[in-house]
Amino acid sequence: MTGGTSMGLRVVTANVNGIRATARRGGLQWLARTRADALCVQEVRATRAQVEEALADSPLSSWHVALSEAPEKGRAGVAVLTPREPLAVRDSFRQHAVNGQGRWIEVDLDNEAGPVTVASVYVHSGEAGTVQQEAKYAFLEGMDARLRALARRASGNGVDALVCGDFNIAHHEVDIKNWKGNLKSAGFLPEERRYLDRWFAGPWTDLGRSCGGQGPGPYTWWSWRGQAFDNDAGWRIDYQVATPGLAARARSASVGRAKSYDARWSDHAALTVDFDQRRGASSSTNQGSARLIAG
Image 1 (cartoon, rainbow, N blue to C red):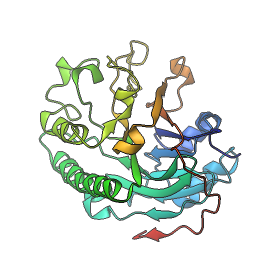
Image 2 (cartoon, helix red, strand yellow):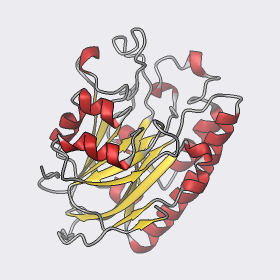
Image 3 (cartoon, helix red, strand yellow):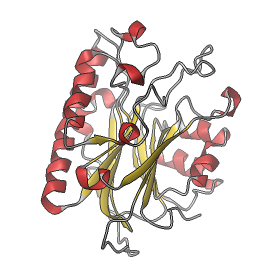
């Protein structure tokens, strides 16, 4: 199966909560039906061999997989799946992944929307007042540096960037149903939210909010436990954020919330963003050979 819309760019991001579990629940078929140009997935929780095995019987079996595995079995891991081999692959963020918990992988693509760097990121949840939370802040500092570098490059040579993934931070009160009960919880701490304040003040745009309305919601994560999903007691913690040139071409954002609890294939819902074609851009079908840096 080939991906992509007839014009422009479509990117889907989803925390799959284990790609092998998602495969068993039919999630890979759901993702394939989106006809995305790039699928950013988080919490892959699998080795490369296990990822390839999970994809083998799915419509995504022929897709290229840029993967950053977590060093601990069954933990984290992120990937970008594309129907064609990307121009380049970079996994140069590991020094910030304390104990291997946060992950980042980025690829360079070229299509009707023009050249773009697409990154898949997982920021681990943390726990207020613990070493785990300090590790989260260390990863966020590294992420902040990479975002600034990508923004400088976009303003210099015009190659835009799109960063997608599970940030494990709800930005504002409209992004979490029970915000009053979580003011001292990881994922809604003032120190965490200040990172989003800084990024979204410029030059990065939160496309889920700019294209998806002012809220409350739509949420992207609900606990498996209790009645959280049925009562829509969720968090908006999955993002697609873009540099200015690409953000200006974003035309829609949608959350793929399952129709019922039983139809869920992850505790997260996928976020899809569509972009218009860049004026005067031409697609390059010769993707060349991928480069894996610090792989």
